[in-house]
Image (cartoon, rainbow, N blue to C red; front, side, top):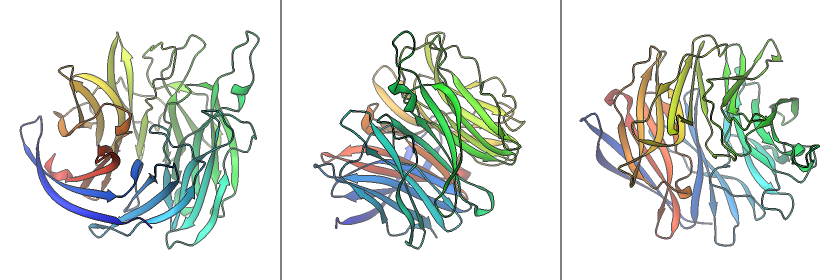
Length: 401
């Protein structure tokens, strides 16, 4: 098997708020390409999945946890040579109790975007519960992906949402392919798929989805698609075991005749919900953040996060009951791109930006991941080094921001 090395180093990054912040870098040195990270913090556990692939496109889905200040040895959860490996449509995972559920994509036909969502459920000890089972059971040779997973309450399984292209194989009265849909299901501790629902019959084709489990039930955000090609961020929530009609987080009015491949992110803390997203408003690219203090029943006017030309690829986490941290990419001076953080309070106060790193604006970077464990902030993204993609992981203290 491939050699796995962990190296630690310390560096100081100069932030835009004129303070020095000590950042610990954890380097992943691996023989093959490593990319598509998914970073999750839940109930005091931090975990990471990513894909390692060779030049023949043999792929491995790897998993590891961070415990007692160190990364545990990695586990290989799935292996394949027929996967759809993509910078934007990456595997995701969640931990519920002593179980981890992961997703990955397998090609179902010869088309570029014909693939299915496969799941693997196993105990954190390594024991397989149910492996290599398909989520979308429609049987159509179409696109299925952009998965989001969270744990249910009381370690009772998982909640999952995804983009589903089963309707796109058909054409409407005008001869156009029908739109992509978004669906939801629950996964039990035995790996059974139950309570499947279609949430919206017309959504953007390839923007990441996001899901959170609030005190009142699951809430899903995604990029919608209207008949007039308005592609704003929408939310739908399950209240009393019934899904409400989708509604706009904010009416940006962004008309775009194609998918921007730039999805939203949602997090919850009691009744407070925070959604961050990329949009274009008045012809200018923006990263927005909006709070709801009513479990997502309504949202405040958005706060602009970026100071320069936004690229997006956002993430957001709650630091405490009243503050979130947003990660985003923006281009400065028409040349350089930076990965940055901002702290935002529920009353609308926004901190100055903290620059984590200069970053490649292209696809190789993937979608940077942000999480908080105790008082430490973790950021993971992909870099291109020594002719391979590799993961870059840094952490910093929340007390320093």
